[in-house]
Amino acid sequence: MDKTIEATVRHGQTGHTVVLSTEDHSAYQRQSRAFLDEYQPKGVIETQLVQFLIDDSWRINRSAAIQTTLLSPGSDACDPKTLDAFVKINIDCQRLTRQFERTLRLFRKIQAERRRDEKRQLARATKILKMYIT
Image (cartoon, rainbow, N blue to C red; front, side, top):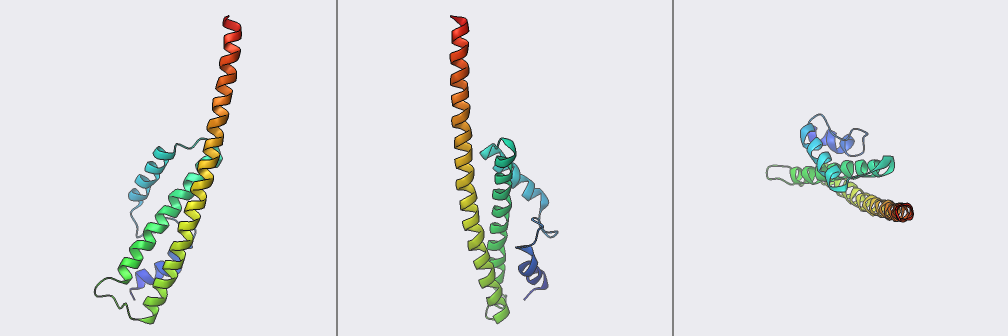
């Protein structure tokens, strides 16, 4: 198995560094911007949850790329180390996907609560304004 892939398999998925030195940092920044633009978080909690979504998504995409590399033509796909790495990456990818889905559900719930609160506050402010205008 390729040493770069082996190092990524052992350390890249579960390490604290999200973007590895071998990866495209500008692609990560573009992905981050796309998530932030789509979800438009407000406040620390929503922003942190979107950051979790960005990082988990990046790791999921990395997992898919590693799996493709492990099974690509010319790789030693029958090597027990390669198969073991594939299984570990697959398990980690499943875990990340479940984590992504839980985080997205939580984010949507918190964001919906915030929006309901904003509507209630706006309705109250409108009611108070109408009292003073009339």
